Image (cartoon, rainbow, N blue to C red; front, side, top):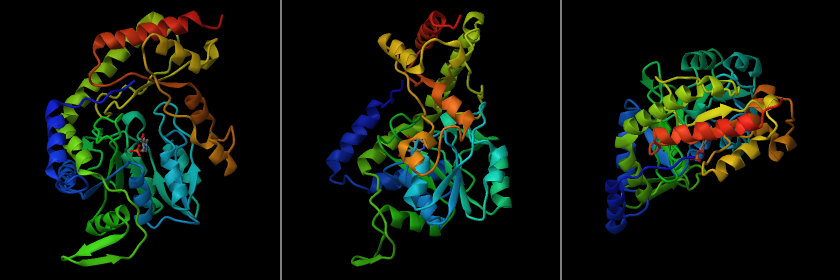
Length: 374
Ligand SMILES: Cc1ncc(COP(=O)(O)O)c(C=O)c1O
């Protein structure tokens, strides 16, 4: 379904780091942070070993904890809401807009209570949530925003890069993302005070001074990125635009092929055709449940048998056992539930060719045609 592209220069660079004698956070991490900050219009950026701890740390910096509520979407990787539980707060899910598949901003204000402290919007598949409306709501209700931009590194909103404005912005560099550090993430913060806190939460709360000074004032974790991983990221960044251009081209090919009358008649729901702002992190279709005699798992198995990998991004969070125990139930967010039950991520990565896209669409169309409700 996806595959990272790592060039030889990066592989050689990693070998140099391995020979350098400095493996954990060091000069490569500093350089990566500087490059990411430059990319984000000069805002302070710190890197971490995941795009999960970044959000947890942002919530801690914002002072979100027990007794507080955080509004988010049920259609995301479970990390998005697990971090809310991790800091002792309660996620408040709001149903999705089935067209964008992102949090429905029309429903957010009704979910705000005196306990609400923050909103975590998710740019699913790289399609940005409307930042103007989001920040208008946040400003009106004095809420912090932790943008879960795990999937939208390289996306833009009205010509501005995601990360270059807003409140906290969290990126993931997991290998399935548009650029990778193997595992890793970055957090864009607002000022030096927040950057210092981010560093403390990243590594045991430690603040060093001089040769032998050390202080610990808060409970931090162990979330630092290694220099080996940072070097991978440094080798990836120069390719971001080229990778995303290729993703856009492949996404266009998907749209073109899905528009053929016989394929269109199958009734698949396609993503929003945004070739300006989205980084096309994923190409996801929603299967026409009512028109098929087979289940999504069977479609995936048949595609797999044809050598085509697919994925489910994601099951609805509130239906996981942990969340059921906390009180959520089926039917709470019907639009997200329908989409989550039928969504299918098709292969999309820079090393693919148009012929690969043709094969995916032809194979999927053949499977669906053979299993239509009569
Ligand atoms: C929407 C979303 N949020 C959060 C994460 C967490 O990122 P990581 O896997 O780097 O912890 C991911 C990545 O898988 C994601 O896709």
